[in-house]
Image 1 (cartoon, rainbow, N blue to C red):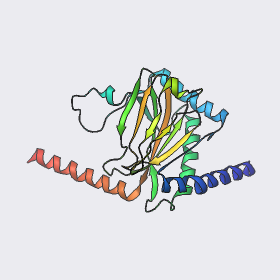
Image 2: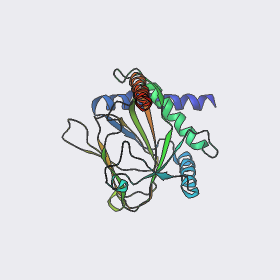
Image 3: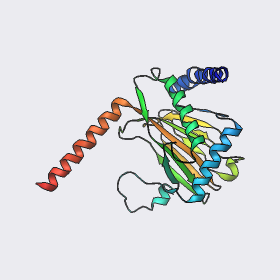
Image 4: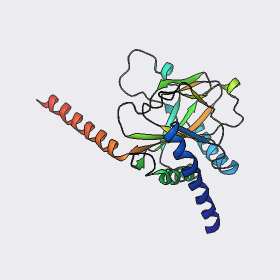
Length: 239
């Protein structure tokens, strides 16, 4: 179907160049609806629900050491990491490839950032018991994460009843941005201190898939720092 693929590529290019790049450079975030379409979106949702039902989703972890505060008061999601090559993740793999293509069209147009790699996909579920994630920054310490992409999977979501809004506090702006986690919605935003954000308490099961794209130079520097830190800690234990 080369003609259909060509049309899809043109649509992605238009989305990247006319919408995503200007929005990221101007306000730091962007979302689009009907990203995959009803049929493929439902296939992704079915695969995520199967993961949830099979028990592979585990409590999300916090960076750094605990400080006596209950983890669930900070972060209440359950997650697993997938590459899209595992059994029964074909639709998720299609989603990831489409987002990869979209981001590749933005490369070279997002300031000094050079994006060549990304994380695995984090499949997340907030169980609907009031769980959320307090205000935080994805990449506060230069770990390489540059752009956060979140794909939402929640049919018939009513924010007034179900909560679960992702609220962004754009740096230097006088407003907040409330993003409802609606089915087939794709959200992109800068991962660093420009976009502190929170997931407000969810009172219905809330699904999302997140990937982070890396700035190659910052990522390489973060890995160097980690290697140096690891080496120095090993030296101190052997001396």
